[in-house]
Amino acid sequence: MCLGIPMKVIKRDGDTAVAEAGGIRKDVRLDLVSDVDIGDYILIHTGFAIEKLDPKEALETLELIKDVYRAGMTGVVDETDIDPKQHPDKDPK
Amino acid sequence: MTDDLFDSFHDPAIGRRLAEELRRIRLKQSLRLMHVCGTHEHAIAKAGIRSFLPDGLRLIAGPGCPVCVCPAGDIEMAIQATERDDVIVATFGDMFRVPSSRTSLEEMKASGADVRIVYSPMDAVRIAEENTDREVVFMAVGFETTAAPIAATLLSGPPRNFSIVASIRLIPPALKFLLDRGGGSVDGFVLPGHVSVIIGKAGYQFLESQYGVPCVIAGFESVDVMQAVIELIHEAEGDPPYRVANLYRRVVSETGNKLAQEAIDKVFTVSDSQWRGIGSIPSSGLVLRPEYYHLDAAMKLGLKARGHDADLLPGCICNQVILGDSEPEECPLFGTGCTPYRPHGPCMVSSEGTCRARYLYRPVT
Image (cartoon, each protein chain N blue to C red):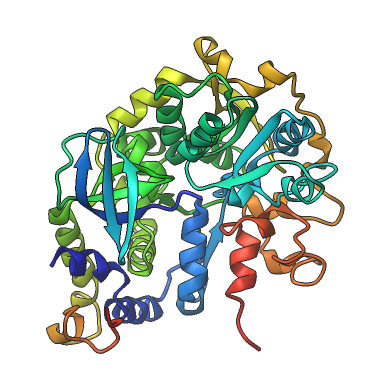
């Protein structure tokens, strides 16, 4: 119910925008967010952007996550294993 | 690049490493951790996270599905509205099949009522604009996350033939209720990420100052949830004071979304509210402010919230499941008398109900 989908803003027009995720485009309302630019990522819930995503914070959280197993007992971390572009499990796009 | 960045939160390679870490943890004592979000339950069940939790750790689902806690009396109001020829009822899909004391919106539609499923409250407004000779009643169900778009919709100036049945519930009072009621103690909470987007980390300040229970705000990808569980274990096994940790900082700020809070506050005011299967929780719901009574379907059409006794249908233990006191599998009806195809209780209806998530992703035997 509280599902939120991160989408990328590709067009802006006043209080509305066109946002895209996974090849799907949607008209969304911007009533609840400010300073949205084309190229920004916004979190969409029931047709409304409820927040902008912060790439810097996302990167920092990922580093924290990697620290969990770097600090753990798993031994040496093979960085290629966690590079999204290189590991084999990633869904082809 | 940024696509890849956000995708990393469901990267199987990272997920595997976290799963390995989780498996390796040996608890000092058994722990009960609770999440209060249907989307978390869905992520946990889908990624099979319970299968690699350390021995002694229980990850239970609390009252995190607004559809499941929507009292039968509120559904009854929407059903009364469907009985009028001059009314169209618009609802989120999740709400469509939830039974009240006598029937559901789905059954009303099957018998000829005009019930339409919408994705956004703005879709319901559009239906009202296209059908000016009929009243459009939107079944406004949700937590804080959904309250904000609903408020924005009401502030956008909907037409005169638009109104809502408000059944909006708030998460912090429910957490208070869970902590105050005693019994079935909770050693830590995974806090709902998208409610947190609206209320911010500050919305949980009382958990630090009054209760001192470990809490982590978490996102909804498998990696987010595993990281949250690992963090909670470390917190719970460490020494107080416990702080609310925010692991979903890519969208959750300290003070939350101010525009959303203002919109909610403009339209709604806090009220004691009924939770299906639980009863009344103080200051746990939102009702329209008097200035917006012209958008209240109950007042406009004289709808009555009857049939709260149907909150728990015979044989159903949804109330215990919602409070985390019982696992869905402990219900005698689970998977036999109650399935997603023929749901008996609300937790099996919503795509985020605990029983439904558990049924859909049950182990294959």
